[in-house]
Amino acid sequence: MKIATPLVLASLNLLLVGVFWSLIHINHPDAAIVVEMVLVPLLLLVTLVFLVRDLIKPSTRLHALLALLLSGPSVFLVSSIRLR
Image (cartoon, rainbow, N blue to C red):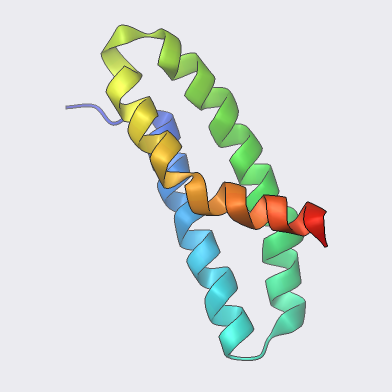
């Protein structure tokens, strides 16, 4: 079984959100800002591009929906950047 690209990217993005929260808790704010302001939004944008592409294909639609669910925390983190 082949795994769709947005599923891999969304998992990586979820991992980056975890890295962000761990950097905040171990008191490394400079590194956390880089993850929050650069890496997560960029990877989220790439994920969404592939997600739309795979939502169109019936064979990868289920993977794309799962990737959409996994992207929830990243969307929340990126939207909290804009609300500050």
